Length: 333
Image (cartoon, rainbow, N blue to C red):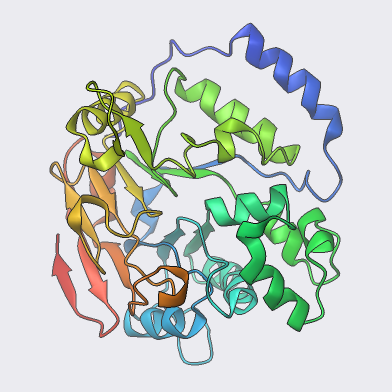
């Protein structure tokens, strides 16, 4: 059975004050009620759980990968039945076809539900930073794409576009708890915050469109984290510092979680152009380097993470996991 989260967690007075302060600022479009965090524990209803990350506008690669993994057909229809698919952010930017990626996710969500499955699309730092400031330099590639399509980035970021793409982006949660695994873009569970506080603050911030808040897009946030300072004062990638990795694993254990699935860093733990796992699958990196080469990516064909026995994620031990290639080949992690 899944261990319950600690009952000792409480919302602090400071957090309660924050909730009261920002709640009135929620607009109609934003209040479509971004849940902040999605929790899914009814895993027996699924035949498999899959995850993908950092598509970065590479629609053709994404489509080919999903077809090879038997998730969709060539017309972009859901063929995975009662599968749970989690997308851990950065669907947009860098590549040439972010709108086609967004539209595919929007099409697949109701189709998955009709077949007894579910598609959860999460925020990445690129979505969050675009929503925080659609005119920032980091969103230049996406902004240029929108311009070519005669779409206004400011209208989309406010959720006021007639097509509903902005509203889709504004509803993206920051993380998903699936059994005893936390799925998030950078995988960095925040320091000094219990689960109740994290869930409440995430929901409050996203419902008020506070994408510039440090919890969302700060340098050590769950969407942005890259570097940590070691005990010797060196600035290194967090995954290259055993102490940082150990502390992260302790933080998630303290919240009743076993592992993390994250993207963001394509070369984390030395895995290049592929999915990889460390510490008995407690940390699984799924950014397989799909971003285009001219944007600093590997332009790989991509890979999909698959858990073929979903209820194993309810146990505090390593589940069976596979990486599925763009040729449809599955290799156990």
